[in-house]
Length: 268
Image 1 (tube, rainbow, N blue to C red):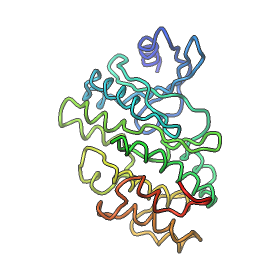
Image 2 (cartoon, rainbow, N blue to C red; image 1 turned 120 degrees about the horizontal axis):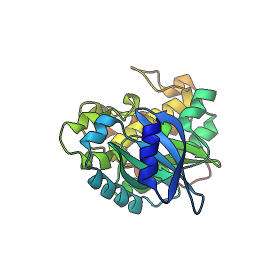
Image 3 (cartoon, one colour; image 1 turned 120 degrees about the vertical axis):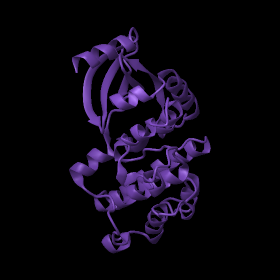
């Protein structure tokens, strides 16, 4: 850890100082860095070794900068920068005080219905902006849904696509797959489709809906959601359509799913 922390510190100098390591997400180690002048904090996510070796870090930096310009929405935690620390590649975003949907589910289990609907709407609104900008998330899962100040924020949108663009060989596709949690991957992604698309994200949304309302992701052929818990018919249908095995049956993007929901208070 000391060697990696020192390498990150050197890469982030002189603007930032690495403060601490935080709990990793999957195969990625994560650190918090503090801006020396303004005091703002960055979350620094370090890619695993095999993936770092397969990535053109210069191209990845360019893709991350492009994402940061396109994903300007209050519901998205946009990427800030990327670089190389020794042999490992990293990317950064603003550090958000709060918790993740994963941590909340681990502590409490299923969400109250009203809160689940609020989180779902926040996620869809954020994804709708990304999809309108031509950016698929590619790795939507509870770890990338941040709960802060009563709002759900979506982090790491587009990172997987940026990595796919920056791979130096076709063999790196298997390395990017190690970042993703299989439960949230659409069947076509599990079958080897490397580049993410909005319909893939909608599959992950359907898994999130089921998990928020039951406390666990669906497995095998789960019972219909309305037989497990009392939920509005529109919400059960939204989740079911999102999780359809055939991409053409799913909502084409988050904007379409938003338009199809019966949201409390009306509108989106």
